[in-house]
Length: 139
Image (cartoon, rainbow, N blue to C red; front, side, top):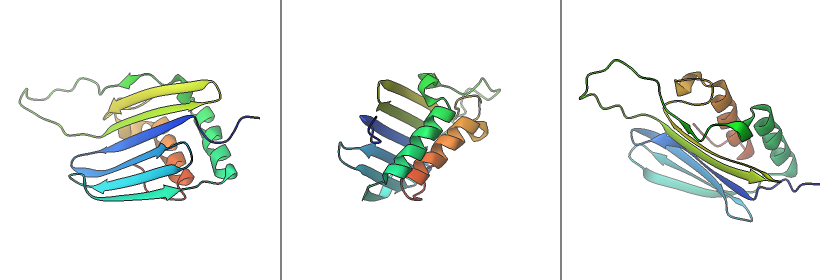
């Protein structure tokens, strides 16, 4: 039977102008951190999910087919003045467990949608991460 804990888990979502969240496995426990806008007021805490929480997380990862996510998601072309600078949401994930692995990232977009807010797989991913932490915000 595969251990419920990962070999690798590193996830991040956020931007300079809004709250940002990170979670990683240090080999023994999960470390969660959050920052407010501008990457200030850092909160860091250690989390020890139960086996049931891990199993539910991995079931969700399988259900959203995270293992087949593309390496990179970019927003579609938009009509904007060349001088327009958009500050958006960046996310990244590295997961490895039981012979499966994925590294994926995006800027303002995600699996199945050019707009991150419309990506159902990413929304399910963020919800699963929050559940794994016992309800801390993620996304």
